[in-house]
Length: 209
Image (cartoon, rainbow, N blue to C red; front, side):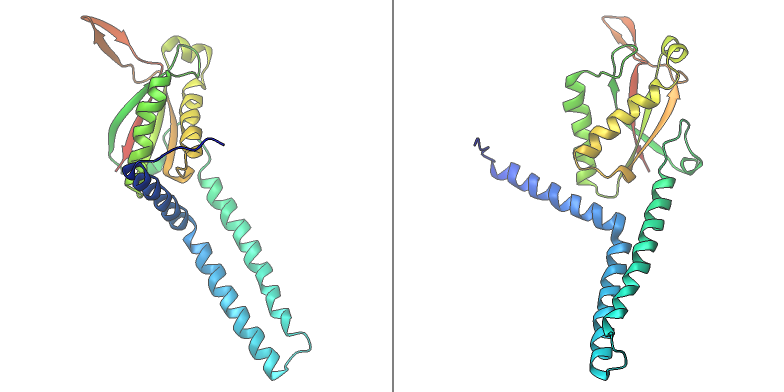
């Protein structure tokens, strides 16, 4: 079995990232943790009282209330998931927010493949930022060229979703990442050796403020 030696700095970064992941999970589902904590406490005390006072032949019946909590949790998570359904356009909740552009990821024309350097530089930097600032949220805005949009109208959204899926696999909560399809409405170019270079096949990373 091959082992990897961590420097003290790497070890601290790993510990910090694990703590941030735990914080994120609790902040997202803290309500449910508290619900189950109070319910178990209530059932434990209730079971003890019923057992001592012998009010019922089967005092353990009080634990049946947990099924109500299960039903509530299923409904709660289903509604929360429904709010996170991916849409092809920016949703109204963005209207009152400001956006700070962090960086962009270039894709190969008419594909969902992006340069491996962008994967490990730009995306990793965004992931590190979100670990450092546990309350931060980002918007991944997928873009296409005019030609791509005609041939594959949903390509921009698919590109943004692919970046989101990658970040989620790296431990970032899906609830902190929004996606939308900018289509071909935001053309962008840079200069290389004095010549304009189109960078429309891309995903923009915005910090939601």
